Length: 320
View 1 (tube, helix red, strand yellow):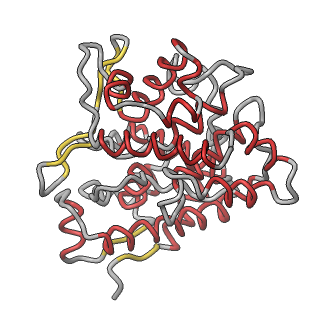
View 2: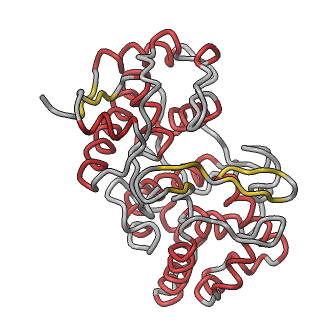
């Protein structure tokens, strides 16, 4: 028996529920999305630069003790305790508000470690971001690649928009950029695509059917807990429940099946990938990492397997 499998029955049951939920809608990543102050105003001239520069940093927001996951990263910024993704968006946009040119590839290419530590510093002036060195290296590598190749985010997006196949053009070009090139499942590239597609400016006019799953921590945790992806009894399931580090091969086996399960769920429910991603990402406020889940208020509670002891795969990557 395979250690990791998709439960077609569970996917079908959850798809039936989601198909009837009008609230399953994609986020538009406008200024009011996810809380105030995270995203540029609609029509801002450097909005595309911002999203290219910040999205490659959407990974690694957790700490460990060398053997297992300890806790997610929260940082105090503007007097608000912000979880990883929100902290990163706010930190980058705060820097962009103060100096819009900070968002340009040329500036990213020349960043010093001290400059980036100031951007990621909390209200007390201390940078506590996990994996800081990797963020610094990727920011520089991104900027240098763009400068060396004479590429600009807005130009790349505009060219993709008029290509015969906008998504494949964008995927091919952006998929070579450091920070977006490393992940076989293209999580950050897919997130950037969805952002640019769903922003009110419609920067990237692509079809809903072109979208690919964004397989991050939250998606994996909820797909394991709902039972859409099943772990057989044994060592792997035990170590996932205990939040212990997995091997790259084990992590990949889970992530690959979640990727496929998201595709199946989209096909069966009729909901596009962006809408499903936002729904399950939002479940982080109910299907908590460190606390007992709030199942009673969850929209799929009635059809969930309630494997609440399970977690997400624990492995350090710069992918997600």
